[in-house]
Image (cartoon, rainbow, N blue to C red):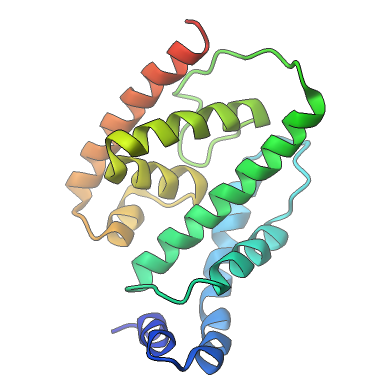
Length: 186
């Protein structure tokens, strides 16, 4: 059992304040690396910094005290980062109003790829639809795209084989490609 899993178990049994103080130093560097990796590929006008992204994600995670294991924790962290980036993009788009949709080539929307706010919002809408049809594939996309995990890391976080993760990835990319083309009128 990893140290992170041990601390997560302690949090579940009621020692949450002491365990949470132990958990942050153990996961902070890894979360910071994931955020920095993701933010390095964001559009140049993005105002959110990796440290701020990690801190906001940590604040959202602090309210949740039930994580089954390390993979579950990092999946929740990826989801928190995704929501933060989507909320930020929505705020920016609300200011712009009327910006036309752009055609998106899914080859450009790859692991932690550079994405403008409009693309990010369209991808999020498509991802929500995918999640209703195939939650496992949607979770894999979130871990790969929003947390910048490799296929191997995402497979470990989800508790699936690398082969299954690759199969989910191929399906999700094709599904999202079709969905994004439909939404752009292409």
